[in-house]
Length: 363
Image 1 (tube, rainbow, N blue to C red):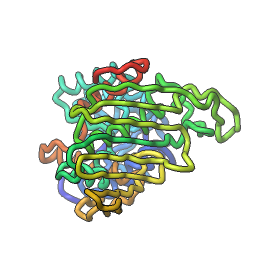
Image 2: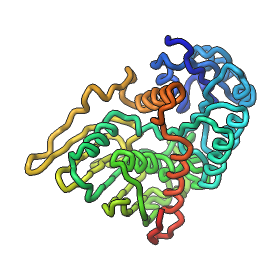
Image 3: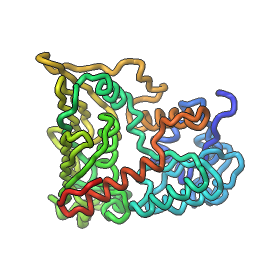
Image 4: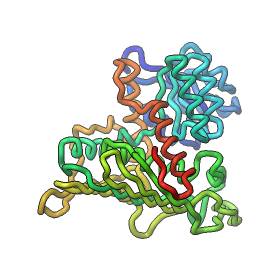
């Protein structure tokens, strides 16, 4: 382990389930720059079991105890979105650096409130838009920057939500309420849109959209009970980039038997395609293909220089790479990680999409 590792306190850790256990813990354990100093859960016995299983120094039954622990440098918030405002605020007021999972808040107002507090405290912040760290995304970003496609003419995105389809696990029922900020629109679609804009190095200038339901009901996997599918399972977005290029995106609930994830970037000199057999950018499994001039489309293997830090492809790889960027930012004052400001910018795009009623809105 390196000297003076960054000591991490993770809010909401269960020994057997949850995003912290699935993605954050494996990522942190693969990186010598970090040490898991503390974990918390609102049931102290679960916090103790998590600390024992994952080798954390301390366990806490309240968030207040964790954020006020002087041995914690970075507080990580991995709980459900409706709790982010309260817990992020508590950590910032305790003077901690904060890494919050995306979405930052249930809505733009909450996100702006957390950003304002972070700025007033001059706090280090990072947001879980970790796909920006994925090797394939950065490979595409560099290809575009180096002129592989020339000037971008259009960008097309197709994705699948994985859940929000025919069936949903009971633990995800809260994502059926748009107000909770964790629907297909807020999570897989937003992650994919953010990664696409990051890769092409551009922003949306204006956008219009249609959100609808093809399915009126979905089935709870554990019980077979039918419940209303109130969150949109169809998202269709049309936008113009800052340079005038066109962007289109279509996300569908569930899994497709055909194309599950596809980004196509068309330019004046070449084209790039990023695909995955799973529904969106958050789960990895990428293949990059490209062609220039009259050459046929061919696979472009991601070069080894886009290292994975020893974290296997899947849930935790992009999270681990995001943590390595956070370590650089906290130690060397680089600016590699997306911050709360980036989170608010993405929340503004989502707000323009969902509030536009199909009309074109400036972003």
